[in-house]
Amino acid sequence: MEEEFASVPLDDIEEEAW
Image (tube, rainbow, N blue to C red):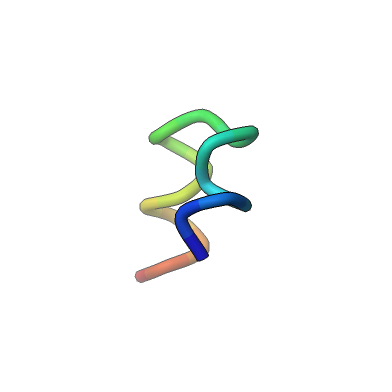
């Protein structure tokens, strides 16, 4: 999943993860 997060801003990652 790190690869997907690498191309996405941390904000978006947190929103999707949470």
